[in-house]
Length: 323
Image 1 (spheres, rainbow, N blue to C red):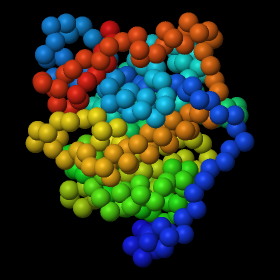
Image 2 (spheres, rainbow, N blue to C red; image 1 turned 30 degrees about the vertical axis):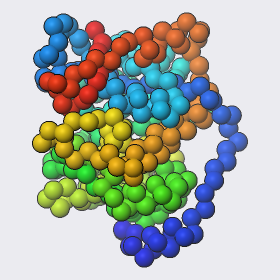
Image 3 (cartoon, rainbow, N blue to C red; image 1 turned 90 degrees about the horizontal axis):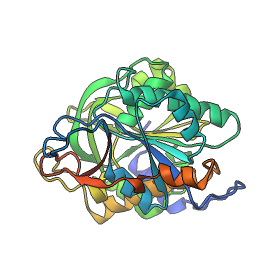
Image 4 (tube, rainbow, N blue to C red; image 1 turned 180 degrees about the vertical axis):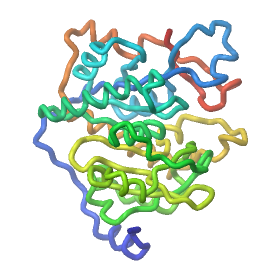
């Protein structure tokens, strides 16, 4: 059920902010971002095309701006690699992209292992957050459904929207401490950008049983009027998903006809910053560390240089490429 405008205004006037936690805070968090196979055209303008995976730089900038360091998580690595890195970092982000969510892709294979590691680590009493953006949220839903695909084809490419708030959204971890100006920006302005061709409907969330595990916090409409879940969080575990792209507002500047609607307004930037601060804040609640300083430093994105690919690949301004 949607929150009507009158109730929303009442909520704004009665919102209580503040956050307390008895957990020790980690002010040097490292968040792992999963790499994936380069999409079509990404390498066209490069003389050296011998790269097997990439991470979009806007995710890195978004997390760094909120106070985290980033460690790329590579694909097609041994199982022990994923066990080691998930037990060393403080949070994980599954990014958007064009990879398959199934085990037919390196992204899907790695995400499957990571997801199960996150479940195991959290069940052992260690708080390890997992965030999915766009394809990453679709991946979370696929894995949570036991490798069943409940997604529906939809039309939401290059679509900027406000968020349609569901009843009870204010009780969620994502929204409960959101400042009023950010909430207004989300509710009244086209402050989120979508680039996806598959959606999870509320009906499929219910039918699949995933609504028993995940709170549906916001929805949106695609170009054809199909309503889909756009923000969700697990009811018990620190697992979160957004179908839209908070990292794009400040960092992706393509203005061709396929990428012309990304919002760069003050309101859109506030929204992006809040969600970056949120996921990094979640990572601060984890105190895992690498086995050594050398291992930590060797894992970081600082060991790699971003490549400017926008002139021939407008989906991203910059990417980190890996062999």
